[in-house]
Length: 443
Picture 1: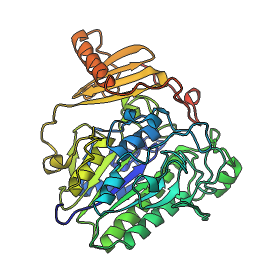
Picture 2: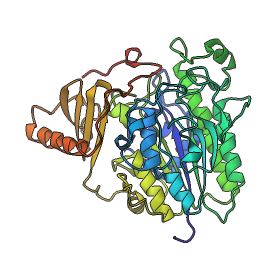
Picture 3: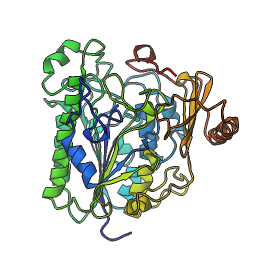
């Protein structure tokens, strides 16, 4: 094991769009710059901001399968659900406890491990954070929760400390932030830790800490098609940002900031009130707007301040990076698909290694493969070829103009797909706000 192993914090927002932070281009209703995320913007200035960070999926639970395993989510049956069904659903699906995970590998190497926030990888008694390597859990199991009642989309109360259901008054974002701070405050400087802080914000229902009355009006079910606004959404981001600031302050108070790698990103692109500019599409689309996410990393001991990287990477690469930073090898029977970004920290401007990034979804029969600037995409049976650097809005379809490149990337996609289990016919495609409720991208 390397000496002076770093602490590791992975902060995951839910449905945050690429340009929803000040440092990535947030705008108000009048299209003017807006200061919604001062603490995250400062974190970006202190570390490295990635302009080509990609989520492993355009919907939540598949990305989380990839993050916890460090592997393409398609290797695990539960990740075929888009997303995993709410509690008390009709399928027993989730992350198998026997599968090695980021927290289980780090825990086995002596790390303290905790998940604060959203799990969404299967329900007790068959699945759960503490069965998959987290020594501590404080949060909720479902894909979403009301910020005041803490009910899941089916009306079940869903707030837990380890295996015990708990009842706490308060705004969920604030409760999660406070618990994360409490975890940091009681860690020993002699033992490194992994903290996964997975917020529900800014996922629907669209509620700030001032909106308890709106929560009561919505009631069980959480459907909020008649509510929310850009101002509400941006305040949710700001209140999450405040909590992240409290976490960073706790590290500073404990003298832990220098040797703690903190990563912030989103599980997929934004929806409804988010700003995905300059990209088109959003959650549930393999267009850039559904996959390209804000991504920041700070580690004063190893990452120079003020860096910007255009290297394409995926959520699962951070699993490999965390293990590499901790000097922990993956399980030999479960090789990682993610690649460590540790060497990249020393020279963010170094040429990108040759690599294909691969996606598929049952929804709309989507498939995508990224190789450098070029992206192969298929939706609803139509094929596209885009240079996503020259044409980030994916408007100029080069498929007919460059048939050889199209065929090459299609063949690469098919070769990778052949290595993965097929999507089962019975896999679920559903959202509380289903595809019929979301604006569909057009070309």
